[in-house]
Image (cartoon, rainbow, N blue to C red; front, side, top):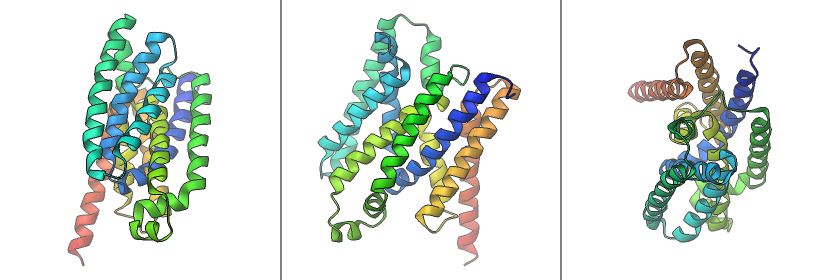
Length: 267
């Protein structure tokens, strides 16, 4: 299996994606933002289609669209939390329409749309792996510097106010990092199912962990297991890798719910 360059690239890229998704996912769950993650995946579809239309790589198009839209959501939502979902819905609808338009104007066949929506392991080149690695490192470095403030803002709102943390600024930075994470991870699982890796591993980990660091480590472990095993099953069966990754992560989450239910009954 590893004699093929595309599989080596896929495993390397998948590992990077799992690490970033596991860490970012903890904050996505804590900040109750799965809907935003799903919306950014739809915006990523429009960005990838735009990139194809003007001759960019799909990843560059995703980065441009998801970054701009995440800043828009942060600015338009402002301090009014209840307004966020309406803003997200409006932006999501606009970008889905744009994605369809750009694909139509680019005169590409349906396989391009399929690759964007569901990912393409075979299509990952060494250059794209390098670019994904650079973006992953950038996300992790920025997270390192804002970790304490982001943790307080996500898990301890009272403490964040006491420490005079600029919540609006932290929120916008986090949204931009989330946009980068979505763009990176979409290369494996596609824009349509990116929220699987950015929500399920972290959502599962909270039933087993008691600290933020433990949640991150478990989420990374669950994500890596799903990606690695999903890539292997996709290779031996020739079935879509995305199907296996989504099924594995859903199964882990189901087991986490069962464990939590049994633990609660035993108390």
